[in-house]
Length: 330
Image: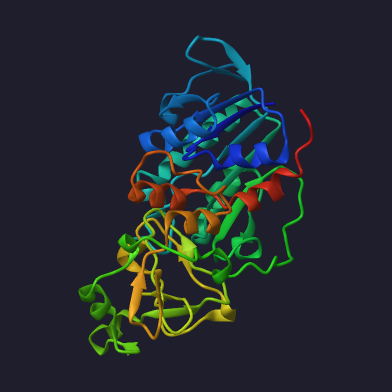
């Protein structure tokens, strides 16, 4: 099987294929983030990196590599940048230049005509969703990662791979992914603690932020590209502040915690316990567990900041594995 992964990031699609034992002849990846490329290359040295998706060339229905050799692509996958569509952002939709990169995916799908394709993105306004569906010729399937992990992560999947959406919750909750011992560098100082909390209550000064606390026996928030989490109470919990359409609030809807994001060290996902006297970030390893990524996968000589970013931008691997189970051997 020849695979082309657009906006490949740290290559979560390749993790899923590898864990399922699906043989891949060539895995081509379009990615521009040097840290994500480094992680993917160290885990999968055979990855063929093509650089910017806008520079990928085809000939007929074949992908042209750097040696001008043509390759028939069997599986096209990708998750085009979501910032313009996300309800957590400015909701610019296709007016955001990053969102327009979807049309590169559509271009290559049309030119290469792979047997299978998969596109992932965030929940979005219906008009944007309808545009994508029209280009791809299929309607999206909505899946929440909380069925396979401790994280609420609502995503849309457009694909022609035959599969049934998962319905059974594996029962993984926040306490299951926490490390028993954590380096002191992940703990917050007095100033940050006081900015969020006053004793065991939310700091009245910040009530307008509608902080949210999520218990450790429920699901975590969606992981995004800069997550440094913190939480609250005698048992570990997640404290989340309002951001974009997320109004926060002291609640734990159905015992599920919020989505891990790329910048949640600034906005949300702060782990706390012992009556709110201690706060700390979620560690990169804990974030790997939230995304069902192999432990240590991103620990490749890069900063924690970059690890949080690529994990927040990545896919929940066990969701992708569930979809890829529908692939026939090509």
